[in-house]
Amino acid sequence: AQKVTQTQTSISVVEKTTVTMDCVYETRDSSYFLFWYKQTASGEIVFLIRQDSYKKENATVGHYSLNFQKPKSSIGLIITATQIEDSAVYFCAMREGSNNRIFFGDGTQLVVKP
Amino acid sequence: GALVYQYPRRTICKSGTSMRMECQAVGFQATSVAWYRQSPQKTFELIALSTVNSAIKYEQNFTQEKFPISHPNLSFSSMTVLNAYLEDRGLYLCGARDRGGWDQDTQYFGPGTRLLVL
Image (cartoon, rainbow over all chains, first blue to last red; front, side, top):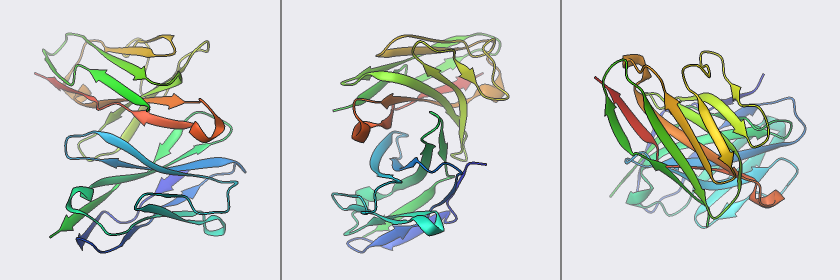
């Protein structure tokens, strides 16, 4: 069965530090795609970064990067030099290559404090 | 860039009435559109997945009779909530998939339509 699990409900950090958010997934497909989204206080969901299962290199976009550990079915999101405006709920998601459906984790609330 | 618009952003309807929400993809071709409802606890419920030129697939607990969806072209989709009741309250999100290229195969979300039912 397909499943995405985010065990951290909430994380609080001081700005300008680095934070890592965990995510593990379950799939039987050999090809799949992993995504991280951010939902702001207004409700808007913003796509941040993706990792394709066949790529060995960890994806990096701006101050977001991924820690893709395929043997552990893990895709952690790393945010470096956090800013106040990074405060949001972060969702991990997975889509299998064999279908269009995306599975979401339950989200991790990130609070960045001054 | 890829943008997804949803309107209305917020709507209030009386119990038992219906309301229609729209989703528009700009800057890319939305070959598939997924409609979700997000609970107050932030959990995503997939309502249905619509792919152009294919049948719309509804998830368990959601039916075409209750949530009819139209996806007439690669930039537009709409969904109606028929006979809305309190349990239909929530944030309805449209996720449009950009299949412009292998590396662009990503789902982008609209800002959502928040439905309140009185």
